[in-house]
Image 1 (cartoon, rainbow, N blue to C red):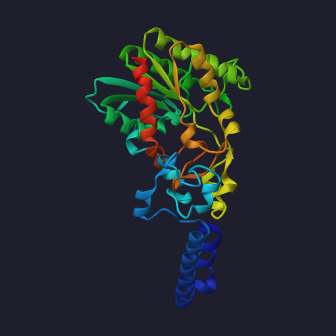
Image 2: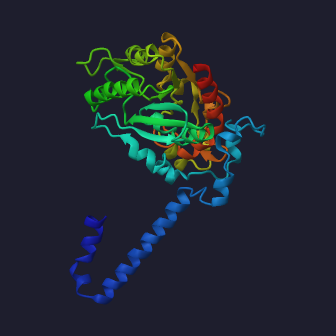
Image 3: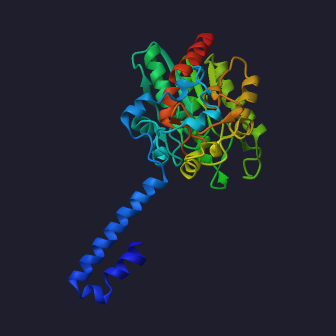
Length: 346
C-alpha cells in the first residue's frame, strides 16, 4: 500500500502543487485508516482483554467441575461470550521469555541447558524435546516450584528427542541428529533423577539418504534407541504424550467463526493419530520402566471431540501448540500425574 497507493498519491502533480489539497488528502487517508482499524476490531473479536475476565478464566480447571453443559463439550461453546487470549493475540501467547531464550534454534546442534523450578531442589528432572515439550514450560515450572524440584531443560525447535533422522525443508536434518547425540551424552553425564520428554514428530526416516522414507515405525524405533541408554543407566524416563493435533490453525478458524465456535471443533481420534503420541506409546511399551502421561483428557475432555475454547480460554495457537494461558491452567492436573509418575520411578 505504501508503494502502490500512498506514494503515487503523495507525488501526484496536482497534489504536490497544492498544500491545501495535500493536507486534505492526508487527513482523509488517516481517517480511512482509523475506520479500517475499527472495522477489523468489529470483524475479529477482541475478546478477553478485560483483566477481570482473564483472572476469571478457568481453562482446564473447569474440566470435571460439574458445570452444565460440561466444560470442553460442543454444547458448552454456545454460552461462550469471551475468552483469552483473543484470536488476534493467540500467536503471541507463548511460554515466557526465559523459555524462549533457552530454546535452541533449527541451525544449532549445541546442547543448550537452562534451569527452572527450584534451583536448590534435591530432585533433578530433565525436560527434553522439541517445541511441544517447551510449550509445557509454565506448568512444569509451577509444579517444580510446588514440589521443590530442580528442572533442567534441553529443547530444540522441530527436533524430537530420538536417535532417528527427521526431515527439514525436504532434506535430512543432520543438525537435529547431532543435537540428539549431544543431549544424550549430557544427560548420561548429569545423571538426573528423571527425564521428562515430549515431541511432535510422528515419523523418522527408514533410509537416512531418502527424505521420502519417513514412517511411524521408524520413529518408534528411533525413540526406543534414544531412550534405552537412559533406562540402562537407571535414569527413569516419562513420556508426556504429544497433545491432539488439529488439522489447521484453530485461532484462524475462531476469528472467522466468532459466533459459531463449533465450526472449529475437530475429532479426537484423528487428532491423536496425527500427533506424535502414537509412536511414543509404541516406544514406551518396548522400553522397560518408561511411563507415559496423557493430558488429552483435559485438552479434549468430552464427546470424543476437541473444542477451541475451554473454561473461557482459547486452547490452541499455531498448529498443534497449546496457548501458554491454557497450559498454565493445567498445572494442577499435570502435578497430579507427574508427582505420581516420579514417585513410581523412584
